Length: 164
Length: 246
Image (cartoon, rainbow over all chains, first blue to last red; front, side, top):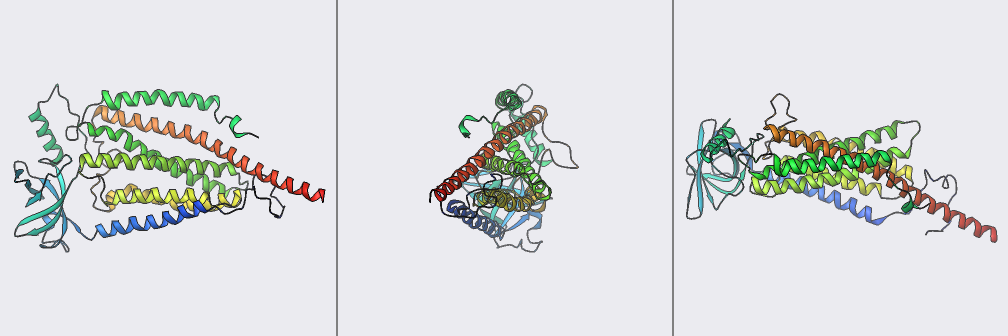
């Protein structure tokens, strides 16, 4: 308990009084929070360096140039998905424009035909070589009801959900 | 005065607590067993019944923090009770943002295929989390109760401006995160029957839990302040007695 001399004034009133001693832990936490906030913003801005393009904007919109590293958004075309030698290939479509994508590995998540995805990579010789696939889920949620729908019907329903 | 012998509950908070507990049981039943799987996500959709209510409660908590902070700053009688409600609400808000970030990350791994992306919604939510950790740290910097109340109230009024940025980030920027399903003006709600009911059940349950937690926590903070003030009073009294002996 700190018994060092101090001015009296209103310090005995309780409501407005508290030890005036500085606390170091909160200061350290404030400093860490400031640094962490800076890191978060920097990471966001750094990730934004790769332009976010729809398939139909490749070669059209500024920043969505062939040969440049970009993020491409589109829907996996039904019937185009194939896997060979550990690689996944599929067609990505948006507004009637299509690009073929090749990804080394399994994209993971709920990746499937008819689902919107974001592919990171470069377009070279009409093939988009991707090193990262992110599945983009829509804001629609449809109940699966096993008593009314067979598996094939569910896939069709999923396709209709994603393609609107 | 003894903090351990003074309960923070009342008959009303106990009733609220039991009601919240009953709704939680309902939420678990509907979230895990009664509501159907999603046609694309399967059972992963059940994470939504915790994720969305958590960020909703966080928004409510931070708005409440800002409102009571404004009341404190603008009032003629600057009661420290407002400041304690602000602190309690912010603490609980930080807890629920953390829950939202963790559940969202798990959902992202199962749906997107990755735990984290530096996407506008995720980044702005992480920034919100960090901001309010900073807010809580600022509250603990020391000084008088009134100094604490004044500086944290100003910070709360600035920090709450991040909430619209977080909520509309999926509209402002192209984002991996989907747009709002329910709070989406101009479009119909795109959640099938029991999914929508379960989600609303989650929001109501979590909101009641938040109210219950704030009521208890702000009383706990009042007791803590009383203990701090009492300790200082004792120290000053001892000092005066020493002076009288001399």
